[in-house]
Image (cartoon, helix red, strand yellow):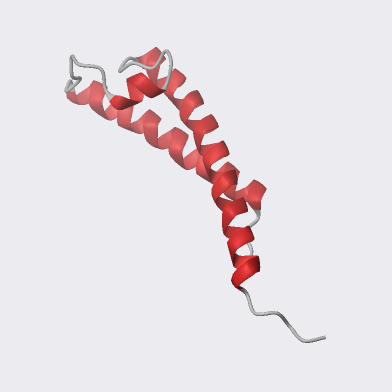
Length: 89
């Protein structure tokens, strides 16, 4: 079985981007925004726990998920091809 690299990358981008967006709004609504910079604020330039920051985080996380998903699917396909039993011809 192989993974469709493009489809997996797009799905990863959507899941990670929307996840960061929802997490940001969850923290905004709860008012539990820490004063110290978080790991996401350090990794994604311009990201902050604000409404504008949620959109910036969505864009960065979608790009991050796209690249990460494509690399994962490509690596999975490469390993699966090497480990799959060869068919006799």
